[in-house]
Length: 256
Length: 334
Ligand SMILES: Nc1ncnc2c1ncn2[C@@H]1O[C@H](COP(=O)(O)OP(=O)(O)O)[C@@H](O)[C@H]1O
Ligand SMILES: [Mg+2]
Image (cartoon, rainbow over all chains, first blue to last red; front, side, top):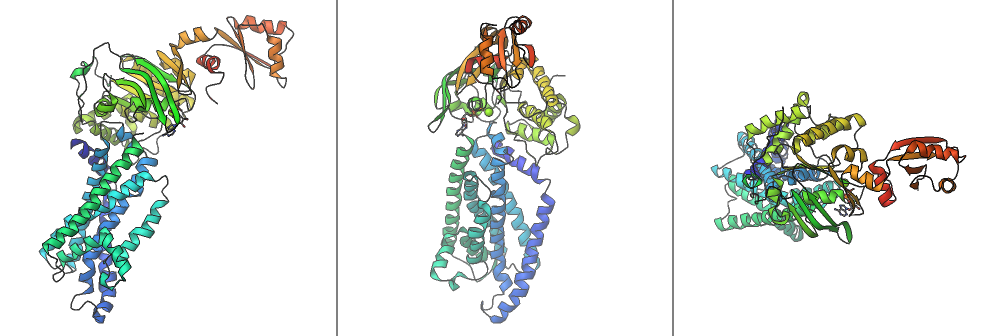
């Protein structure tokens, strides 16, 4: 564990230089979401009455929260990981020490977890200030956002360890992350989607997290305990499989 | 001031601060012991059955051209690459099972820089020391000490990026010393540096050597090998072609002196024919002829005595470059 923490410590040492900008943007983004989507787009949607008595702002806040976790996970697992193999080579420096590959991976994922949790706390604080959070259950979005982030980041860690050039990441963004954000129930309920797209939403980790977050912040969208456990288990499966893939990919890349 | 605590405790009392503990080892046992060591990448054999023994306090070199298999060997010794075949023991331990324990007692300066540009110069050392489980306060003191040793104290809070190539190398060497390693592995420590920066690095490494640190280095510069190595192996195509001290290798495989002859546009093959019988041996290079003799001046006179008029004549002492040329028929640096 000390070994894992020493890796986390290095990540935090580096983060000390950029944390102000990073925390500021985690305040600015949810504010913009609330103003842009919630209030302006929301006023049209609410007039249309599509969501019944539910305000559009209240509807999309839990979705945006999950999708922000997805963005943070992508941001911390694509270029930075690739760079540590290919450009700045710090992973290569690390495996020459007593650290094991699993310590390195564990430390970086732990750092990501901290980033996810702080971003989510700020998101909750900002949106609460706009009265878009309606239950103390909202605290439950913290573990959900953390789990979603790892579920998404771990496979991207594996991907970043396998590719030989950074050109794949913009494609991953365009063809996976953005479509997932659009069609996984963040902006509108997926029962409006054609069958095929709905299945894509079911497969994506994001949809499961959105359902859980919405259940936590919005009375009336609650789910049974069994359903909640099912969604959590699905996310945990992604995280577990992703970790296993990442471990294999890291070993292949570093210990040759 | 020395950043190193010597003499060290017996190896079997040293425990890696993170992970596995070291195995017991007799005091005179080799620090590194390899027999028939092989590394293959697919069908390609990069290291083809080499035997190596490195003793405590020794400064040992792998000399060879690009692609000889030096880095592949160093990576196996550094326990970041699994041997494909043969026996390898580091500090009496088995790299296949005790990699963590071995790495805790090595210092590695890799061929390619791997400093963290997101950290300051000093933070690079502190962060690296933490990977060895060294307490934060001790790590900071150690970092100060090592920055002093590699003459980077003034740059402690600077970022890494603006440092010159030579400074980055010295910082990497300092980083390799944070854990008071039993063996320091240096893969081409001065490749790509200008002569002045190179001399600064050599001076630091020489200081380490004097302090009794076991150094293992690779190089394709014969002057580096001559300056730093007590003993070296000449590697070519994954094999060891000779092994001894630099001086003994030169005595065995070359003459005391060499005459370098240039003949403008004339055909060097023809000239070599006309030189036959002079000196002990003749090598024809693309741009000059090397005439090997005990007494270079005497041999140079004999050349003009035959009525030949070289456009350039240089008498010098034999070097490891000549040894390599003799053993492989090729030059070290291309
Ligand atoms: N990971 C690898 N995969 C395939 N071939 C490799 C790999 N690493 C090194 N080689 C090959 O092995 C040979 C020896 O390389 P290396 O040990 O780096 O030599 P040196 O350090 O002496 O220049 C080279 O031909 C190189 O191309
Ligand atoms: Mg090399």
